[in-house]
Length: 85
Ligand SMILES: [Zn+2]
Image 1 (cartoon, helix red, strand yellow):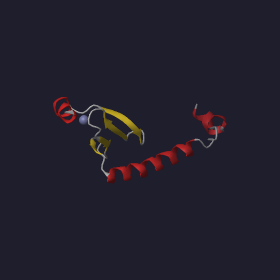
Image 2 (cartoon, rainbow, N blue to C red):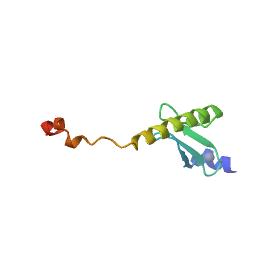
Image 3 (cartoon, rainbow, N blue to C red):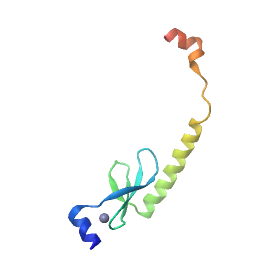
Image 4 (cartoon, rainbow, N blue to C red):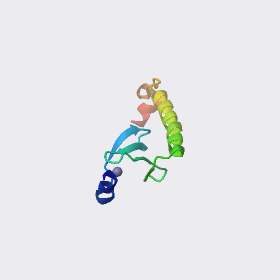
């Protein structure tokens, strides 16, 4: 019955995991089908292969976030920046 609902009305996906800003994993509220955003920005079935890709993407993404937290040198006090103003 749940499957029928989806074939009639379409899947009702909710985000179950944020992999990166652009890639997310979704699960259908009705049939529990799992999908993810693929390289083209379209939804595709979350196969073991895609799960693997997402794990790697997530790791890279988290590493980037960590790097962003490293204090950045404030350039506003540098002479170059003042000239630019
Ligand atoms: Zn569904």
